[in-house]
Amino acid sequence: MSQEELKALLQRLHDELSTTETLDEDAQALLGTVVNDIHSVLGDEPSEEKDNSLVDRLKEATDDFEEEHPKLTEAVGQVIEALSRMGI
Image (cartoon, rainbow, N blue to C red; front, side):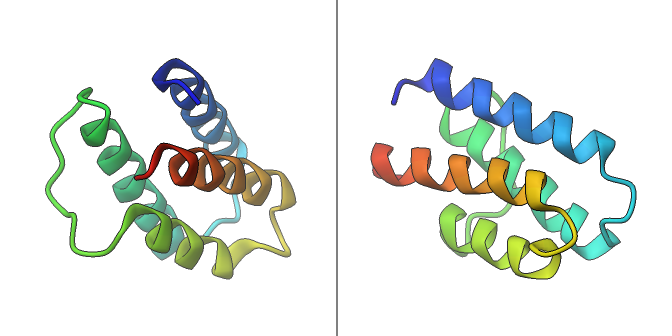
Protein backbone atom coordinates (compact mmCIF):
# COMPACT_ATOMS: atom_id res chain seq x y z
CA MET A 1 0.00 0.00 0.00
CA SER A 2 1.34 3.41 -0.91
CA GLN A 3 1.45 6.43 1.34
CA GLU A 4 -1.21 8.07 -0.82
CA GLU A 5 -3.57 5.15 -0.25
CA LEU A 6 -2.90 5.34 3.49
CA LYS A 7 -3.59 9.08 3.42
CA ALA A 8 -6.92 8.34 1.72
CA LEU A 9 -7.76 5.86 4.48
CA LEU A 10 -6.82 8.45 7.08
CA GLN A 11 -9.14 10.94 5.41
CA ARG A 12 -11.94 8.38 5.62
CA LEU A 13 -11.14 7.91 9.31
CA HIS A 14 -11.27 11.69 9.83
CA ASP A 15 -14.62 11.79 8.03
CA GLU A 16 -16.04 9.01 10.21
CA LEU A 17 -14.77 10.72 13.36
CA SER A 18 -16.37 13.99 12.36
CA THR A 19 -19.79 12.36 11.93
CA THR A 20 -19.61 10.28 15.11
CA GLU A 21 -21.31 12.15 17.93
CA THR A 22 -21.46 9.53 20.68
CA LEU A 23 -17.79 8.54 20.85
CA ASP A 24 -16.47 9.16 24.36
CA GLU A 25 -13.72 11.72 24.93
CA ASP A 26 -11.05 9.15 25.82
CA ALA A 27 -11.57 7.22 22.58
CA GLN A 28 -11.58 10.44 20.54
CA ALA A 29 -8.36 11.59 22.19
CA LEU A 30 -6.66 8.25 21.63
CA LEU A 31 -7.70 8.12 17.99
CA GLY A 32 -6.59 11.71 17.48
CA THR A 33 -3.17 10.94 18.93
CA VAL A 34 -2.75 7.86 16.77
CA VAL A 35 -3.80 9.72 13.62
CA ASN A 36 -1.23 12.42 14.43
CA ASP A 37 1.41 9.73 14.94
CA ILE A 38 0.58 8.21 11.57
CA HIS A 39 0.97 11.60 9.92
CA SER A 40 4.31 11.92 11.70
CA VAL A 41 5.48 8.54 10.39
CA LEU A 42 4.46 9.66 6.91
CA GLY A 43 6.37 12.90 7.35
CA ASP A 44 3.27 15.12 7.38
CA GLU A 45 3.27 16.41 10.98
CA PRO A 46 5.31 16.17 14.17
CA SER A 47 4.25 13.69 16.85
CA GLU A 48 4.67 13.89 20.60
CA GLU A 49 3.86 10.31 21.67
CA LYS A 50 5.30 7.09 20.30
CA ASP A 51 5.44 4.83 23.39
CA ASN A 52 3.21 2.03 22.10
CA SER A 53 2.97 0.89 18.53
CA LEU A 54 0.45 2.70 16.38
CA VAL A 55 -1.37 -0.51 15.58
CA ASP A 56 -1.68 -1.46 19.27
CA ARG A 57 -3.12 1.93 20.14
CA LEU A 58 -5.59 1.79 17.25
CA LYS A 59 -6.75 -1.65 18.37
CA GLU A 60 -7.13 -0.37 21.93
CA ALA A 61 -9.24 2.54 20.72
CA THR A 62 -11.62 0.32 18.80
CA ASP A 63 -12.32 -1.84 21.85
CA ASP A 64 -14.37 1.01 23.32
CA PHE A 65 -16.62 1.73 20.35
CA GLU A 66 -16.65 -1.38 18.20
CA GLU A 67 -20.32 -2.27 18.71
CA GLU A 68 -21.75 1.26 18.65
CA HIS A 69 -19.78 2.55 15.66
CA PRO A 70 -19.28 -0.18 13.04
CA LYS A 71 -18.33 2.21 10.22
CA LEU A 72 -15.67 3.87 12.35
CA THR A 73 -14.41 0.46 13.44
CA GLU A 74 -14.19 -0.61 9.80
CA ALA A 75 -12.23 2.53 8.89
CA VAL A 76 -9.81 1.98 11.78
CA GLY A 77 -9.44 -1.66 10.77
CA GLN A 78 -8.46 -0.66 7.25
CA VAL A 79 -5.85 1.74 8.62
CA ILE A 80 -4.49 -1.01 10.90
CA GLU A 81 -4.25 -3.39 7.95
CA ALA A 82 -2.50 -0.78 5.81
CA LEU A 83 0.01 0.04 8.55
CA SER A 84 0.74 -3.64 9.07
CA ARG A 85 1.37 -4.14 5.37
CA MET A 86 3.74 -1.17 5.41
CA GLY A 87 5.64 -2.61 8.36
CA ILE A 88 4.66 0.23 10.69
